[in-house]
Amino acid sequence: LSYVPKNVVLVFFSGSVLHAKLLKICAHFGVSVYNFPESASSREATQARLLTELEDASEVVEVTRRQKKYALQSVAHQCEYWRYVCEREMATLHALNLLSFDMKNRVVFVAEGWVPISRVPE
Image 1 (cartoon, rainbow, N blue to C red):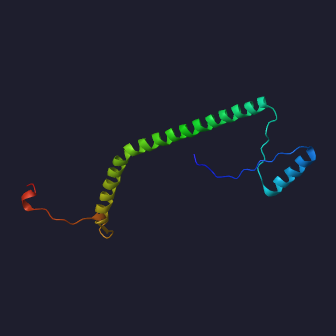
Image 2: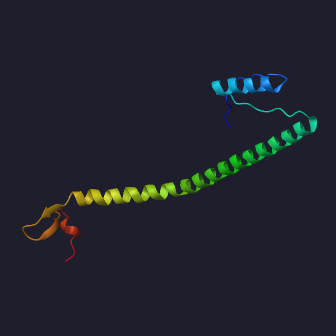
Image 3: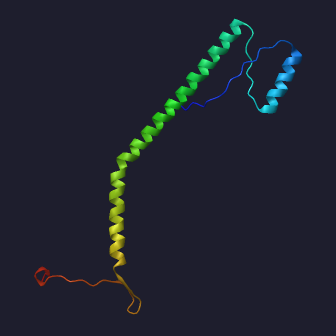
């Protein structure tokens, strides 16, 4: 979780006319307005609801973190194998690039090499 610094202003007022004017000013400046419950029981209910939402969000973040970790661990186990496969294919393609292409004699690939006579079977 990353925290975002914010400025907070508390405004206490009485009356519906002043309430309407304050809402217009807040809307003009793009201010987020949060209602403060009047009674203690509704404040406690709001606090309990917000704590539940915070716990749910924390659980979602934790599950997501675990899923990412599991996925990365499974990929890490296969990394060496895929490195080996890629190196093997690159070596094969490099060897094929050393061959010549001969259309005149209808031979697709021509390779020249040498072998010691002692290694040639009779």
